[in-house]
Length: 483
Image 1: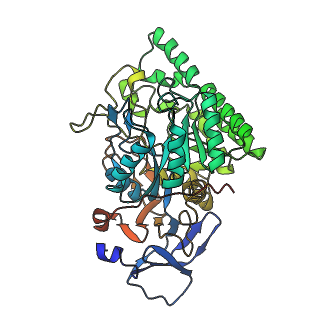
Image 2 (image 1 turned 45 degrees about the vertical axis):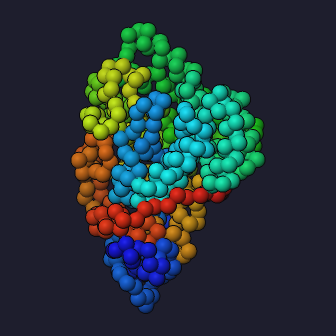
Image 3 (image 1 turned 120 degrees about the vertical axis):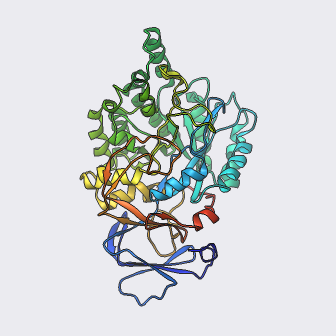
């Protein structure tokens, strides 16, 4: 497809012979796209189109939505960053069937949160091949006493309707309970959606210092500093604080059975609380890296990848809506040091506090969830779409433009081959990272064709020229649809 046809409002594409799958159900149907939108869904319609994509024997899914990524994301006072920029990360997303992502804005030390947002939005708009949004990370008030003024501007002027609060990392990003309450009050007043990184930062720091005092500095000890109780306590506290204010709550990257149980219990009581988990917690485990020495750095993220016995409960809660979404927390670093990037995973071998936190997964999310979840029996087809597309779209103010195959929706469409035979490897992926947590995993479900607002970015697993000549859009998002 050419750039001219991609931008032609009258250009039509027929996706024929497939089975349309939404969170509510599935049906054998063809899908007609005109310009950027879906304009028809039907069976044996006499539709003429400028081009036809054969989806016989395949599923037609709404494009995946990953609401937790960190592309060219700064850490350690902006002295280093993740390996993927918005170009490589968004191409990796497209190859994985993800057509929308939401990244984060962290306040620069020398700028306001609003000014940092403007800069970061501009960078992403110049590079991303798929549509994207941005969450605001709310800094401690000591870093910007008037930050609430910026949050109001971001919400009203830029459609930044989700704000993240850190309950971890005291002294850098952590907000205390009074600041969290004040932020939740403001979110409730405006209609913004509060998110929390839920680990008790003081407990984590105490446990880490005890390990260091005992000479336990190797990478493998990171998991011991981030225990189940540290995560579960913070989740419980966040739920209590949100209930006191009367605001909904979203808990990112839930890794612990105990933490997931807190969320599931709150949901069973009717509280508007949602939990997100990630593929690394469902498929990889402590046992995979506990003997790797310094190479265990490749698995370090917070909360940590825990013991394999922890996984069954996460799958149970994800299947039964105790946990509601699947994101990646994609923060890709390299194991070997590229010349053109700041220090990466092995910048301080043998000393876990200095190992950059984060793992890759943006390209692999849907394939891994399909193989381990759908093929593995933990998820059905509709639940797969619910956690990877529909629920994220609803919670983060993008539905029904995104997250559904429906007339009038954006033509964010994935043709999914359930009979593929693909092996996941770092070398075969499109992220800048040089390793993959799922290296060698064989998957049968594969996105073979991917459309973003009617632009065919991937056709038969090949990147199209339109992906090199057009860009995705920034999404000004509305309020969360909670039910």
